Image (cartoon, rainbow, N blue to C red; front, side, top):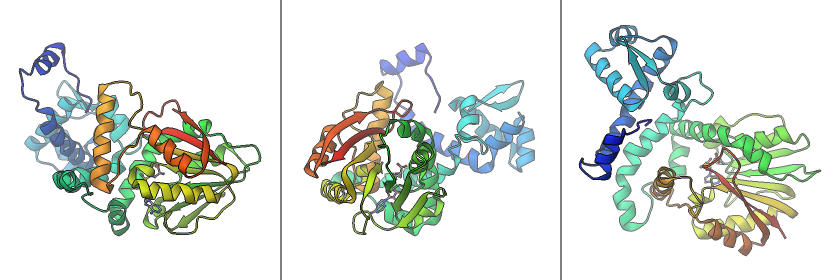
Length: 340
Ligand SMILES: C[S@@+](CC[C@H](N)C(=O)[O-])C[C@H]1O[C@@H](n2cnc3c(N)ncnc32)[C@H](O)[C@@H]1O
């Protein structure tokens, strides 16, 4: 929601002269965006600025209701109106139009289900500490939701992977990479592009691999990283955005299995959020804590501290732990370590 308070509004909120309505109205804003995306309003306005009536005619909508939605979207910061014509703001053009390389449209189904079906069970999750759903089992049983989730995580990975690939130390002569829970394969492909001698294997659940990237040196293996054979002799293992969904016991087990799958001296790269990170501001911290709550309600997981992850790595036989923040990738930091 690219909505910024003017000084008067900011003061009114700071002094609590007005009720804190943005939690309630933020939820409504999500529905306004989803409805507009499904109807095709962002794509239509991306092609040609239009009045509400022109848009209603072109998309076969009710004119007064269309006008109400357009005004709300303008208020939220996605449209601008001049001389009765609506046009997209830069934010809407970048993130909510179909042809944009940074489009988040494909992930809206996932966020709608998360906010409207899973989060209403937050109260129960907090009362008993267990997740509202078995999220990855749900994805495996629902191809449309799985596609949307993978599209969302791939869109995030597209932004992070080039910097991550530059930061990850792939030793000279390395030939084998394992991408654990690698889903779409975006992180693997970024490393394959930089290292022509490398081949990669993504292990993930079957439905997750349906939308995976294709590359001549990329192998997709359907299976569970907790139970199935992982192979051995890897130079590098990636574990991106996986441990936040696992219990401490599962994380410890997985780290031990990955230590056994690596060559001596091989590198594990854990890419995730860390709760003890220095964040650039209060809004970023708030997003991190809401994400932490999202992991609780969806998978019973949490954002761990870097120190906790390091202790689990050491207990599994890793050493030389290093922390890196790839530039331009605030949402995923790296903890890297070597097998003894
Ligand atoms: C949050 S996504 C991360 C995807 C990708 N690594 C990234 O960072 O964008 C977690 C991935 O772990 C996979 N996953 C969860 N449990 C798994 C299991 N037991 N075995 C294999 N994959 C699993 C999910 O299917 C999903 O693709």
